Image 1 (cartoon, rainbow, N blue to C red):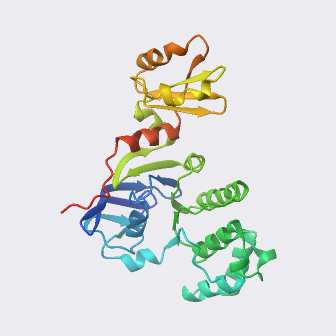
Image 2 (cartoon, helix red, strand yellow):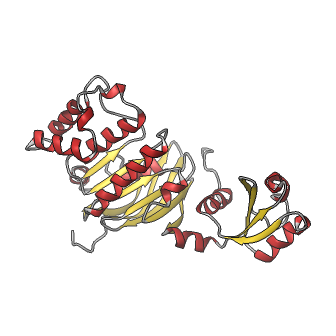
Image 3 (cartoon, rainbow, N blue to C red):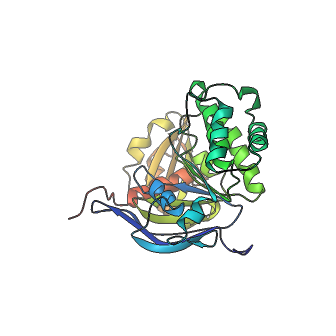
Length: 310
């Protein structure tokens, strides 16, 4: 693999289960050292795509290379160079933090196991808790341990499947600080998440809805390509108008933001006309559409493929 080659380059990835296409001809390219946020509603094929990329599932159609290795014929070699952190904590609750990491080191047949474990404990702030049972840890500390286990063998790609679900804001921020530190050292990260603030922390994002890739690029590129425009409304009772305004022609979404209201659509003139009945009591000013606006807009335009085809 050359220094300029993508870390991940897959084309037309497709997977079907029981007559349902859960991933439908997905293309995805991620350069080395980049953090790519993978977003989409529940059941949209994010986890299945991650598992195809790391070699756990064989695609029904499609091709690609991961770290320059063929996705279909070099699955074992790919697995050896990938760290995978699943949604559910998968380590041993009746072992200590150190014992869990020592076990992982043996699984990968690592040399200098003691040194590697000690370095991982220090790097992720786990040293002071090394002798605590994993099952007694809070969600944030379990997350740190799972990350330490996923990168212990020094993978070149890290796949994270909704890693911060149920974790408090401070733990989430510390987790993302660690992810960016790893990326600065050259690690490529593909992370699925439902949190918009986490998507904004990524170098680039990919949005998949019901198996189909709908948007790809930096946050600015995805918002710009959406064609959405927005207005911010402030005034007495503005936040109470969302349901009524959302029914007006030209309005794609209307949502309260504190005491204000955020309204968006695809045509500014139509949007201004839609809110004009409230112009006397609500002050309307142009606003920037958000990433959340874009994703809700895309999701509402997507067809739910949960119905099994014959």
